Length: 95
Ligand SMILES: [Zn+2]
Image (cartoon, rainbow, N blue to C red; front, side, top):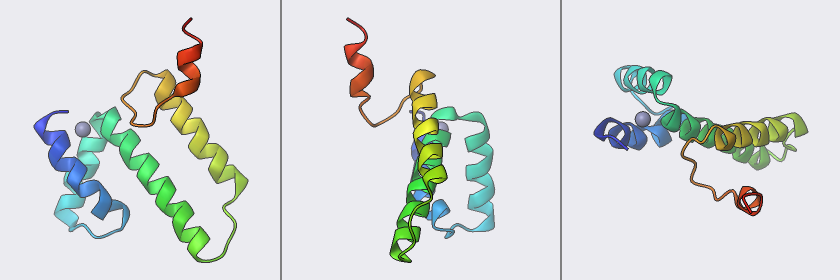
């Protein structure tokens, strides 16, 4: 992770909560365009927060959104991008 990434990562949480200034927002967005590993972190955070908000409003998370999240996660994993979750199932296939 470069210095840029470390700095931008700190903005991710505020970004998905809509708490960044316009300048910080632009800085983060322009980084996400060229950095797949930060983008994967952002997308996962944003989608998970969307799910949490929905559950807080006593709405069921639509199955399409859940499927979208799983698709994105498996896409990032198969691309070989850094992903924090352990992909246990792929390990057994290496034998
Ligand atoms: Zn980055």
